[in-house]
Length: 225
Length: 297
Image (cartoon, rainbow over all chains, first blue to last red; front, side, top):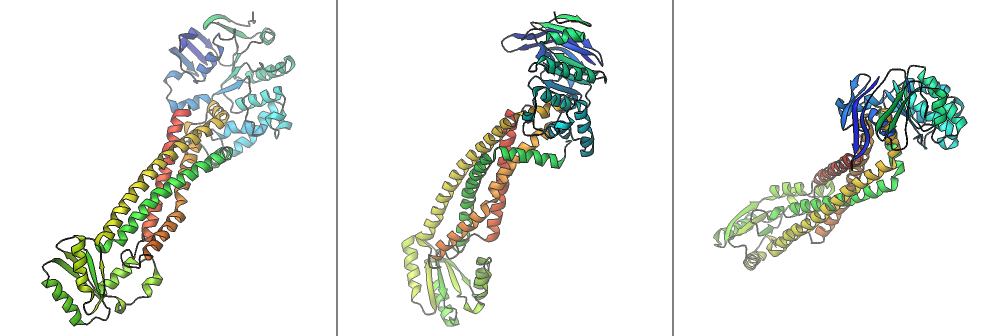
């Protein structure tokens, strides 16, 4: 599903974000990306979404070399990748259901599809009763659920989660992880960058550890360490 | 382009609501610059119409009474033929004068219908050997008291002053208009830049969920173009008002030298269309530049 071959990313001033990374993530896997701040986790995620391009190496997503994608095809790549962030990135002037529907509207999904898929995904994340609330009326955990609903409503092949529990208390984080695990069980590949030792140690999924841009560890059913 | 018109206009309306005062301010600047440029063009067209009679070196015109006899007309013709200081002249009879009058006042049915062929004064359009003001004046004076002559109008320096003056005013209009145009372009550029900044969260989410480049860019482009288009379109009443002011100035001249200082309505409409199109182009160009610089999709 995802394959990196000798991928390097160097920012201005010779700051090495990633150095010679080679790894492969299979369809339906759940992978934790761990490492200290500045180790290259976020760069790793941005490269998969083609928000940035590597300086060296090749990245394959769903069998395609994304480095060869022309600009106008990038949106089509992104429709197969859902993204979740620590700060939720919700639109404050739209309700919960409008936030979720937005992801379908902007890619031209028909209205009847939107009107069936949005309630279904809100049901999945347990927010049916909050459909008409605005983000500011929700708790942090609920806001993250909306963000997950928006990322998953288009049924992407891959879900990238950049520290999705970073702003949440431990109890709420557990709820979010259960939701991500449930989504993973539908066959969606989940790549999650995190600092949360408890979650990684509890879930015992594959762990890829980055350190100063190097691949320090790639362990099946791993722990945080 | 995979999007719905309804969604597009909703995005546009969000955008306009967020920066409405900026939108209006920019629109007014475009309106002023287009109005100044358009006013220059209307003035130019009005002067062109008013001085049409004085084309091809015609320096003075001898108008005969509408009921001048053939003998009186022949007398003036003979006098012109005999004068070595006259290079050439053209006789404009009642019918030709009527046609010219109808053409001059083609926008005013009331004026056109108030005059019949019989009311029109025939005239001689005269090109002297020398265009010197003193000589023209003396020649013109020589016809004033002739039998059958109603009025002698000399172009002399007045018309030249008007033509030169209008050229100078036009240059000023053009320079000020172009300066304002550049400021309008910069304002649209900054408006779009501010709008992109105000909507950065939406744009970021659109990018992440895979909205096409056109879906993201089009509302901003339409906003810029709309500003220019509306700014240009609202110039119509201003241009018409300006044309009326010019007409009043012409009337104040006693209907002699600048009897028709007024651009034809069709010309005003053409100038308005030109200003509207120019406004739209400026708005679009400025927004495209702003998008290429500030919107990374």
